[in-house]
Length: 458
Ligand SMILES: Cc1cc2nc3c(=O)[nH]c(=O)nc-3n(C[C@H](O)[C@H](O)[C@H](O)COP(=O)(O)OP(=O)(O)OC[C@H]3O[C@@H](n4cnc5c(N)ncnc54)[C@H](O)[C@@H]3O)c2cc1C
Image 1 (cartoon, rainbow, N blue to C red):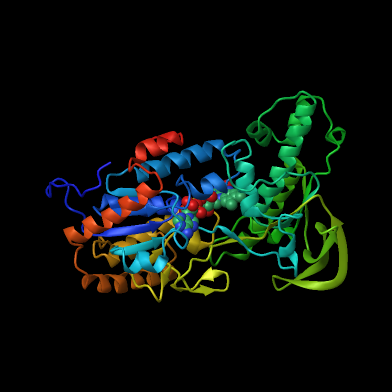
Image 2: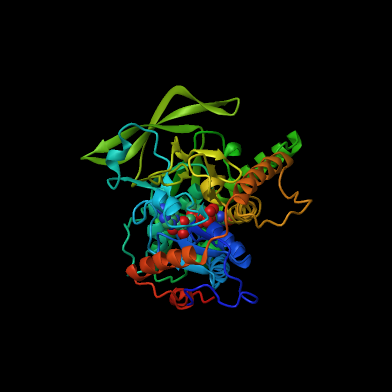
């Protein structure tokens, strides 16, 4: 891998700017790929050895086809001579964020670090039982995805029948599916039936059992229940466009009910709506269940009633949403970064910082992350660096959001106009720092062979 800027200015012009990306997955790779294509040198820092983010550690592993396709897309975007990958480097732990922004010499820094923290279970004292009956969705799915990987060094969790899942979004359905699919797989293995997880997920549990002449009841499994605080038709499983008509909204509610019915039947999971966790059931210093309070929905909000009930379960998995992990030096607003401009994820204290993907959108969705990253790059970063192509008719986004995006882009462009191109000396200095960090984590600077070892050649 070439560490120095290309020397022929006609064929390979010296990079005009250098940009750091924090996170190299869907959003980070999208922005880096675009910028490198425009002749900008990029350093992509990722906390993990591989740059696949939630594709590797969020999507449950039965999505084999989608995973491979996304791995290849990310790898293809990162395999560019102007992109320098820096693995196993967590910003905020290994490199100070403020230092990266102020001292390294980057023209701009892009947060593409997704949402790797779990929203806390809103029951007093719950955190005491972490690892003692209580688990959060993010580490649970990571552990499941690496279950068969002997080299995995992270925390491992058992997948237990009759678990309680608190949540209501798509990820909570995945968490419940992990339980019922894995427990069914193990019961089938005990009976000498060998079937892959992907096949079981594709066919569903009833069809698979039927093919082997087995009744669900014979397996002796209780299944898994999701407890959701509002009605089934309120579950955020699909969203309607802004200003949707009442008919469109009703269609969406019907679609949500249908999705839950289908998942319940195909994967033997249950959803108990109108229930909110309200207390802990503890025995011998272990969480053995939860006390729930019945709710009712008023004006779209869950309102607590007087009625409570208790549910015991083999484990409690909280799946009520993912938020960005705090990074020292970045102001928080509650559980989120305190963005001054949400369209481009800009922070008041750092004029050269932008953010792209799930860290801003909060949407657990690959397409949404990629679209947002591309838009931030085009309207924000490229404008900030003064290299944006001005074109009319970029109307893929809702008009209001587009207006504010353009305003932010123009403000950034004004700021950029006062910024000189990065000098050759500054470029050499930043490359030296990048190389020093790469060497300290044992990275040779050759992304192709690094990713090839991960089974995803460029
Ligand atoms: C259980 C589950 C199921 C899902 N199912 C689907 C689905 O079916 N379809 C779909 O479209 N989407 C699905 N998603 C969501 C989708 O995977 C994500 O929304 C999307 O991949 C987010 O991309 P991103 O690049 O914004 O963030 P991420 O993929 O989270 O990437 C962030 C990157 O930043 C790195 N990073 C984080 N912090 C730091 C730091 N401090 N320093 C350096 N690096 C850092 C991470 O290692 C990671 O590589 C699912 C998510 C989950 C959790």
